[in-house]
Length: 118
Image (cartoon, rainbow, N blue to C red; front, side, top):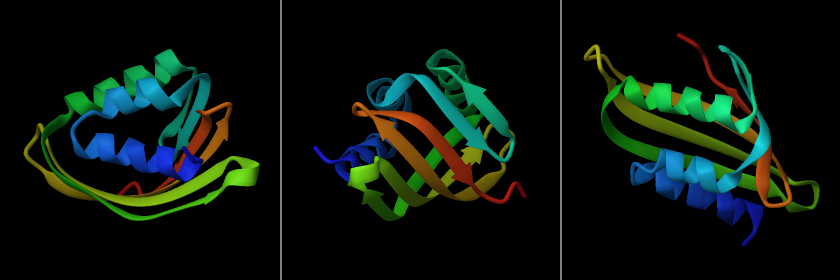
């Protein structure tokens, strides 16, 4: 399976409500995740953040993968997505983001998300 196919599988799982399954399957033990709100290091800390994020969601309305591209030789995958969610406070948002993943030995070791924190 190529890195692009693995990232497509991640988003297929997310679309089925299996974010943590995708995380457990594809993220490395020493993963670093960076986004405008901060950086997390290590699989346990990153997984806890994902669990907290899921706890804030009341209803998941959909996920649209706009693009996925990869540089297989250098272990880099980029993806553009839109998630439509309603949070526990009742606010509904379409969350648009671009992510850049660095893969080593079949696992994501670094992922940076770009989005406006509006």
